Image (cartoon, rainbow, N blue to C red; front, side):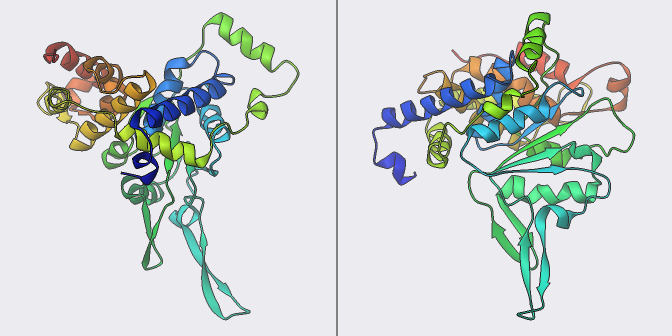
Length: 325
C-alpha cells in the first residue's frame, strides 16, 4: 500500500478521495450539462485504473468530455487525431540523430502523458491501433530495443463514431478488451440543449473556464483509495458468475475474459467510494455491468442477423443470475 495511505487513517483517505471526486464531477458538469451518469462512469473508469472508449454519434460531446476531464486535473494531456496515415512511431516516439553529438536521441511520442485522448481511434490502421495495446495493459512501452515505463496515472480516452464506416478499421477484440468501459453520451433533452446555446451565446466555450481543481497527488490518492474499498467474497462470486455466464450465453461466439471481471470489480469499488460506502454492493455491480461487459462480447452471425445485441445478452444475464444478499 502507498505510504500516503499508510500514514493516515483510512477514513481520512477516503474522505480526501471523495472530495477530489466531488470537485472533479462538479467541474466537468459545468461543461457536460445533463451528463451526470456519464461523468460518474468516466471518473469510475479513471479511479479504477482502467481506460475508456466513448462511442457515439458526431457532436454529442465525446472529445469535450475528455478535454474537460484533463483540464480539471493538474496532469498532462495529449491528443492524437487518428488518421489512416498515422504510424506507430507517431504515437510511441522515434530516435532522432543529433549531428552535434553524432548520436541518436529518443524523442518521446504523445503516449508519454497522464491522459491520452485518442480521437476517432478507428480511423487508424490495425498496425497503428496495436501501438496502444502494451501501454493500456501494462503501463509501459517497448520501443527502440528497450522498455519505458509510463508515469502514473495513465488514462486513455478513445472516441469513435459507430455510424461511419468509410475509411475506418473496426477495433479488434484484443483492443476492445483493453477498455474497462464503453458507453455513449446520447442526445440531450430539449431544455438542456437550449442551455448549451445559452452558455455559448457569447462565443466563449465553457471549457475555457475550467481550471485544475485537484493536484497530481490527489489524483493518485483517489486511485489508491479506490483500491482499498472492500469487496466481499459473495460479491466477487457474483461478478465472476456474471462474466462466466457470457461465455455460454446463446448466440455468443466470444464471451468476456477475466479482464472483464477485474474491470467490473475495480469500477464498482470506485462507485462505492463515490457513494460514501466502505464496501461494494451488488447494485453497484449491476449499475456498471452493461458498459463494462457488452463491448467485449462477439455474437455469431446467426444471432446478429436475428437482431440480437450484446446489450440484450448482458440484460438477460443480469436478470437470470442470483443476486447475493
